[in-house]
Image 1: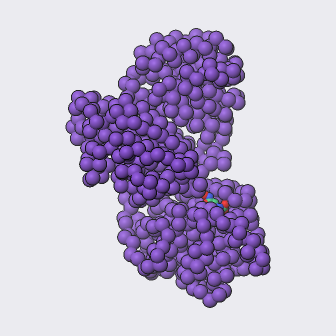
Image 2: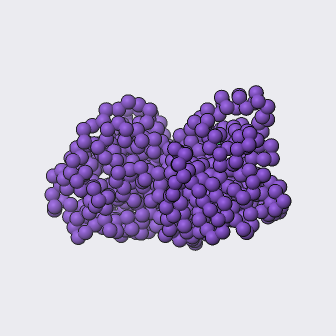
Image 3: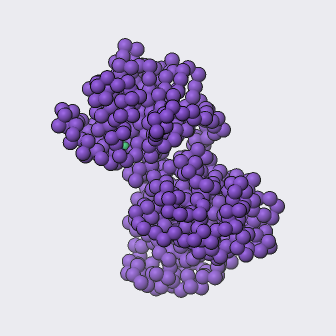
Length: 610
Ligand code: HGA
């Protein structure tokens, strides 16, 4: 959420900053801004409402020259999306900064600063930071010290890029609770919210740690830790290709990412299997010993990742025999909990920077969990760095705000976890071999489902004019129904809810009429007969049913009942296979409705604020 980019170079930086913003746009896109210090020390700032392309057009019309600058793409937390609230924020033409995060004590600081004579031009929490840094600069402190002193008074989360217009030789960056990387070039240095922003200019990165403050010149980077010590952080080479976040021939990133799932699953399995077995070492060298001691599992995550956790609960309890609880991180972090004995604490997050999930992990570490494990798509993320064990999903960059391939790779990672843990809890070798074979079959089954794209595109026409949709599933398909409903509401703005089908008659059945399409996820499993009865309850009340069922399911199409046939699979991998038509349905409905599929309104990816 909110994208930051900054540069100090010997060449003009405006184009680099704008390209960085374009690559960060998935993080926020309600407004954007750029500030560049020109050769004569004059600061030029441009801010626009809406997407980065608009800012780019304005810069094209009024070019910005200069070799030191910062830029920002915003996802508003405090103050409506408006030009006056867009970053960079400036104090008295001297101090300029961009911010990602939330300053929790901004009201108190604002009161003080107003009393001291500062004039506020925005409703953002951010503005108190720029005034505070200004006060320290005018008290005579150099920029790095001014930022340190000012941020010492801030509570909450921030990643900052700061410039003093009277000091064109320095760019200062600070990180506390929001991600920030430094890009290392030759005679130039950069900052950004993630590595993708900077891939066109460098592949060498320093990942700032919590509490770090960095001072960048064209030739040097100096970093101080939260204790004020000058520290050395390693420079890491990124293997990610600069074009890995490009859309290619696809109309939307989301569609590209849906179609990438077979490859993403194969990549996530690679190196994690040996013959018929899962390699527990894939979770870390100490994993075999730690897994042997695990007696319970707690999973904490947000949004789509939470749905992955809910599926995993079925697997962990039924296959590994381990009690498992799953909770959304924003709830978990604010309640008292009982820590089960010898429990494994699992976090799931695409970005590894999800603020609530990260906070939950920190609480868990202090409250006595035996081991922590992160399932994550970004190797250098905070979640990965702070967990004992890690299983990286190899989904590649996911740019569409609605998560697709990150979800299914999380599911396969959780199946690997179930199998690895199961080994120490009574899962037989034969059962493990069967699970491994099924995992290996997922990519080809997914290819078969993707071939239904045209059929689902046609089906989508029946949803376009609807206000609501109900999704039904039972067992491990209930979280898949939840995920289907989430996808539909995120990108098509149709109100959608999921229910475990058995709950229908306890309330939601009252909603059923000819205007309420009902989507059911119906693999051929032990709960099928129960689900069929639930579907009859809908039909009897004139509801319009759309059933995604595998070939073996004895269901016939008739008036009011549309059946979409999927390849026959096995219970174990059904959640991965049945997710795909849910994604395609949401995608095609959104395209027909003409919404902004990759950047739906009000949302942003990588939720780094609470
Ligand atoms: N609080 C600041 C920055 C928002 C942000 O980081 N969003 O993810 C603002 O509202 O401008």
